[in-house]
Image 1: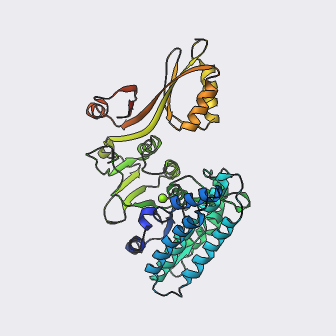
Image 2: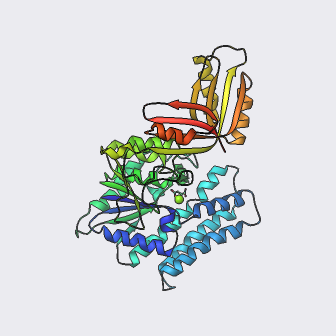
Image 3: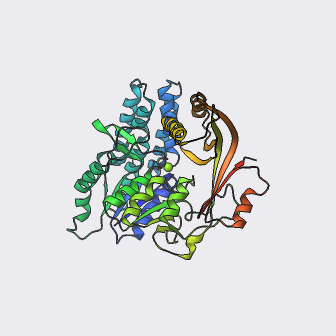
Length: 427
Ligand code: ASP
Ligand code: MG
């Protein structure tokens, strides 16, 4: 069986939803579980709804209407009969959302977010499921909140693997195993969302649908997972920052993990591990040209694994931290500093130390960084350097390094066997 994940851009309008069903047609000899994101930029639209709701802003209903009308237009294009069941089902979901928004919000923003933002996925799967069935397939819709169980860390919920495996094996596996009429099975569910205790909705972090696809791939022992995108595959650099970029044919799992970790917006970072653990290949393909090969992420050894990748992470700040009493930076200080970083949920993107100083490069989130500097400042002298970007080159060579740093002010530089990293001033 295969897992197909379609992101927002692949279901952004009626036309692209029709392409989804054409792609499924191409694979009518396979069992397929489809994981779907919210349509187009609808997650962003719902984030606006959440903030209007939480701050009691006057334009809440405008923002909600934008969300509703976006989908209604698509529904009208896809279903010619205005008595089609989709209209009732859509109205039902929207009424649930309205009911939620008519109650006063609690003070827990992340909780409120997770009760509202999943409607993007709930609506998109409803529409696509009805559409696929209306063109002759038999597709079963699952509510991911009945299957994907998480803790209650809202907005970045952690998967409860044991519970989730149990639910999927009990509810989804029998459907695919039932081969009575020898037909190939099709099912659909939402990416990105799950549920915690008491069935409150949770989300797995922005762009989390890739991860959902990996979770289902792992539990259902899929032969492959395909992420359908509006690009030909994974590129070796972001075309916004580099001119001569190319599509990469093969990537190892470790390449993919490192790229995601260093900030390449290829795939959600958690996606690779479950697939790697079971050796399930992941393909990134272009839904506009489904026959093209795309990028394969697997254990396949290939000379093309030597592609040079460039990853740029803007908005960085380097803090240079030294003990106030001019003592050495020793293990005790390091534990102290990293405990503080952990308490602020700050991830360190690069680190370098000397006898009396530790330099760390972190995302420049002004609110968090100010608070961090205040706390660290109680025991350490802090100097900082802002407006930086960190550039990582995977499988570097001299030419690549020169391309990145020539003529730039270098703040910090690091080289290991496969990665070169440099922190430079933004132009
Ligand atoms: N719809 C969610 C987002 O835009 C999840 C996803 O697309 O993966 O972040
Ligand atoms: Mg998305």
